[in-house]
Length: 215
Ligand code: AMP
Image (cartoon, rainbow, N blue to C red; front, side):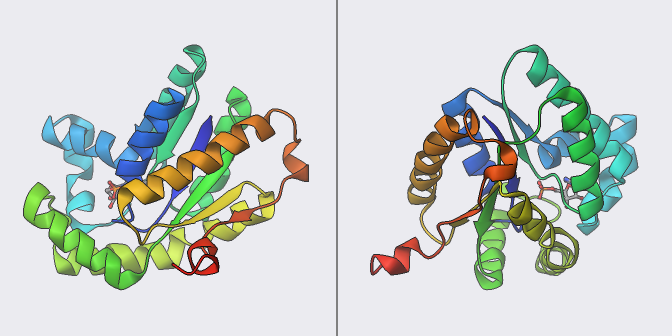
């Protein structure tokens, strides 16, 4: 299964990405984690990007695109799928990623959108700050990351909706419930992606399911 995760910071990309990757034995490619590892090991790349991470700004496209190209090529070589978490974050990255994936014959099957309100994002990230001590989980930087998400990342959701590979999930619930719903829908899609050509697919919106069942 080849999955892209699109979500505001704090929506649960890391948690759900790990779950999906282990369920489908896909490679979990988390650009934020890869970058933080470089910073922790003080590699030349880490030194180059650490300020950007601290300020909650995006690092240059060529850095993340190269990381993802390498990881995707590894997944292909191992005959595995991938769960890409933290990328694409701009329309430009989405287009560049499409070109890389097409070249490797590894186009995404599903773009999974985790929907969470801004207030919930801030609440979750401030709670995470007490546990993980990430340098970008201060209230000021959280607000900046959220604004950046609305400005440049969220518009990508429409791009995937038009391509018919978008699955939207309400992530304002306990992680186990969200995870269960994601795995159920991806299991159904796994059977479908092998038989339905991508230009005949339609976006799937599960965000209203809860209210439809009176939750
Ligand atoms: P995350 O762990 O996904 O919240 O990412 C943490 C930080 O890593 C972001 O605030 C950016 O500074 C950087 N980053 C991660 N992914 C990307 C990306 N695709 N493009 C640019 N910067 C990124």
